[in-house]
Length: 482
Ligand code: SF4
Image (cartoon, rainbow, N blue to C red; front, side, top):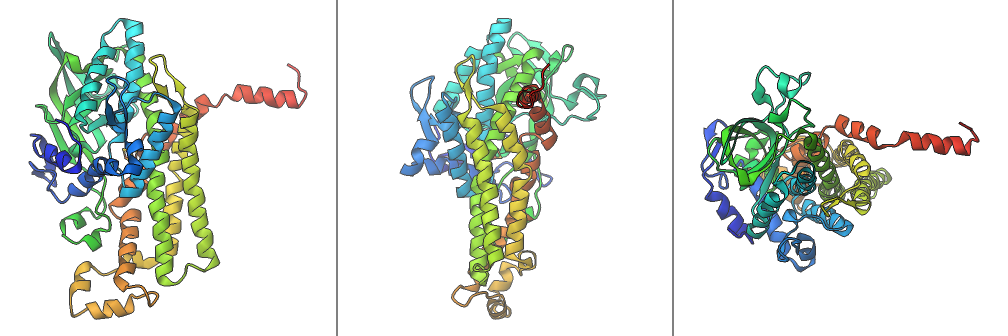
């Protein structure tokens, strides 16, 4: 398999023989399922955009393993410039899709496992790093989509993995054979699960001594026996099935699924951690930092589109010269670019790991994501404020098509005279999608909980803040002696 364009990507998904359920029914062709297709369109854009000369240097780079040209989504960052380029690529794709394009979780998983498998081998004499590099080189050459799977379902949150009444609440080892391992459990909220060829599994939290069976990491093809996918729903998602582009509001979309592993066999050459509890927390923290950096790119790109939509909506209804509207749009830009600053800052301050790849500065990456838990909501609020209540009271595309009502709607929903009514409605339908419809799943709720919920960032910020050093600074300036 060598996927180079949107068509070959979509075709490759059609060949997968997976066990997928959508709205209660087995789905053998996810690509052509209208509920899934907008999210596949978003991933396909990651194959499309690179063909544009101005985007090629962001979308493609050189493999440090093979020296060949590869997609940046499969790259191991070799410098702080690489980290910055990753954020720029994500902003570019956010601008193009106004949604989650789903390939960054795998990319961030690769970069976390690259350094941790190296350190694990140093500490335990394990063979993981070379295995992982072999796997990665295959991913780079084939250019498949790899879903990063971290979030376990967790059951009773007050109990550790080994204390759960049902041990399957955390994905775990159930058997070892000379050829590999057998695992059971489930991963929740899996971004792009139905649009991926491969699944890269990582532990969900730092495991302790006695929790060895839960410290597992591996990769398997998405159509491995024993894996079942159940697509998650989104607000107003059945609009995707109505065949009405106007009412849908965005032809791109995001996707999450529950992925169940029911005694799945993983061959040894695809196992990258098995029982090394002291390494599991490093995978979680490094992956989280990379993905918290990612949000300083993708959500900013989406924000760019929303700021454009605010300006358009104001222009179309004649309110764009009002000072409060100009102020609100300026505030949206300020919030959005602040997120971008965080994404760039944690990249520019990145550093080399023992394995030689570069990781982001974790305090700044966590600041980035904590801001993302808030600012997109304020941007969306300002957008709704500017757009007006019509975003949730518009008639359907069918009413605009019906000769009995079309002329009334054209007349009474018009804004400024020079703008066709339908253009005004198009931008308002997009705003509806992004702030209260299915697009809000990726832009709003994912901004809170994706890459870890706000409390996870607060814990990391408090751990990394170095308050002792700040106290010493204050004492020195205040002439306080120890
Ligand atoms: Fe990529 Fe953003 Fe989606 Fe994460 S939320 S996979 S960073 S587009």
